[in-house]
Image 1 (tube, rainbow, N blue to C red):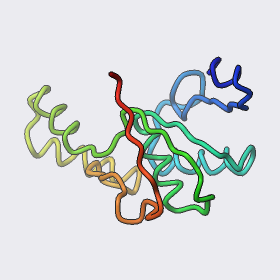
Image 2: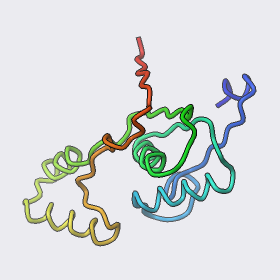
Image 3: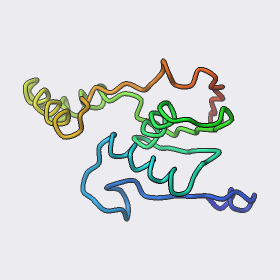
Image 4: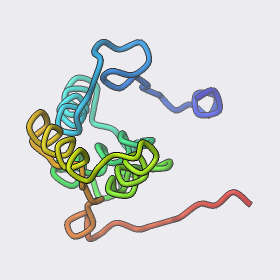
Length: 137
């Protein structure tokens, strides 16, 4: 954050629900999006966003379903673009029977309202969006 502050940007950073110093023991994607809405209402509007992992997915969904300026910038760092691969790898690592994996998915659906098999939004993700991929190199 120091380089952004040095250039004169105002930066708002926070720990996501159930992460870092924030409260809670678990978070769901809908809960994360709701928290982002509250941050936006309290401190926004924002010109730019940066999200990592589940935060990237939550920000993309928030912006997909909320009015924002066409010049809004979104930086995603290793976003959670789909969860099926991670769940399959987790199940394989623990040698879970398929019915156990199904039960886990059913439980996630029950507590969050969404199945594990989430896919990154693409259809409605701002048709005017300009993509500028970055690479380390």
